[in-house]
Length: 140
Ligand code: GDP
Ligand code: MG
Image (cartoon, rainbow, N blue to C red):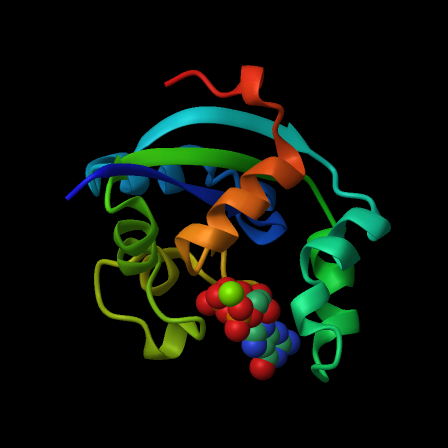
C-alpha cells in the first residue's frame, strides 16, 4: 500500500477542551505522521466553502456556526493508505455509533461536536489540503 496524504481538522470542541495533543497522539499511534499543522480560526466564508457539499443539509448552518466557534487545528497527515487509516481511527460520525478506541468514541461530545474531520477520498484529500495549505507549508 502506497504512502499517501489526507487532511484532518481538530474541531473547536476538542481545542476548547485542550485535546489537541490527545487527538494527535491517537493519529500518530494509528501510524499517521503530521507533515503540516496550523492553529487557525476559520472565517465564516472559509467554513461555508469547506462544507459546501453539505449546504442543502438541515444541519449546515449549525455546522458552520460550530466550526467558527473557536480555534481549529488543520493538519496534513501522511501514512500508508492515509485516507482510510484516518477514517478508521476517527470512528463513525456519531460518537454513539463509533467503535471503542476511536477518537470520536473516546473524545467526542456529539454528532456535531465530534472532535475531528477527515477527508473521505483521495480526491477530496487533495482538494482539502490545497484549501488550507501552500505546498511549501507541507514538510514530509
Ligand atoms: P464525517 O465525514 O464523518 O465528518 O460526516 P459528514 O461528512 O456526513 O458530516 C460533516 C460534519 O457535519 C460531521 O462531522 C458533523 O460535525 C456534522 N454533522 C453530520 N451529521 C450531522 C447531523 O445529523 N446533525 C448535526 N448537527 N451535525 C451533523
Ligand atoms: Mg465528511
